[in-house]
Image (cartoon, rainbow, N blue to C red; front, side, top):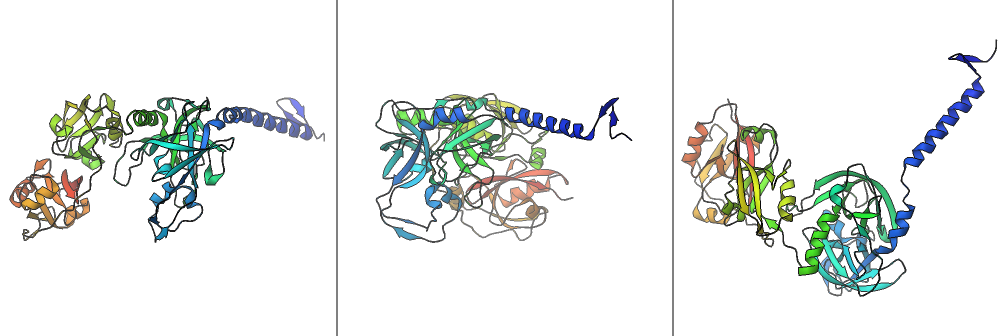
Length: 475
């Protein structure tokens, strides 16, 4: 029998079939390779505008012992609690991070944590020149700093538009990870608008998430698109070890340049401010407030004398849009308000008691950070818990003043439905089912009118922070 076999009436020998398969594989590999980007020209055109930044500290300071890798980047220490401390004498220059030249006059943008508390900032260029830089201004809230070196005709980067960035787009980083100057890593944009609140629960940067390998020393370096434009500043990584684990974050260049221009002009950054405390709208809270689906930012507190109070915002309002831009997640509101200019007029779409309304107000300027106060506890509780599982007590005037509220009741114990909802002993309840609660008697009256099986919103103050909790009324 002939070794040939029939395929669609064409005689093909086994050896010829193997050649065809191999050819197809080679062709597929060639096509795939052509689809991958070539970064060589991008790197050649922009590497000279990327710098390595070191700092010197002359004064005595107390800090925990660091490994060699940790010394490369102070920023990552904020993710790890100190385990001890020792006095640190004069420190030699340390390679802390990266930066990039904005213009030929010598302005350089980097992260605030790279130059924070530095007595001297040293900038090293690709041609091995080292220049001492002047700190023009810094902004811890966005983790950005603007510095300047005395030099002319410096190579500088081209800036792109981060608002046009798309998820899945190729991006490239140039920096000095672990002190290895001008290292290049590439990847794609994984997500946009990531919310990463600070230790003070502030959130003014909608981060770009990528899978570009970023390590200590990359901080402050540029993130390029395929057109060779800077669209972000590498700032953070998500890590349990301090090293790259597949998730990194960059500050959008549009946000960064707004900050840089203010630092250049005023040495400080002014942000918009409403003076409200917000939280996410869960499914149960959406039901409690009569929403068809969870969205918007739920106002859990309005500060006295704030632009929000003057403009008519109330506790329990759900802000669904700011100046026409829809708000799906509560974390989106601070990004929009922070970019608004102080004293500018803003329009808010609000859901109040199930009805849609519009509020027009003047945006204020975000004040400096304040310190939280703790609530004191007093006696005088009711003897038995309510049907919600709560035992409450009145608040004295001193406690009302400490919290900055007009009325409320203190939780002595929480069991049953209340405990399941997350209410704790020591919490203060100011609203139940969107009704003010000023005394144990008023609390009992409101609780008695609640329909069984409903999910109602309970506004509690825990420590100094207001929080809405969804509580299912027992049958």
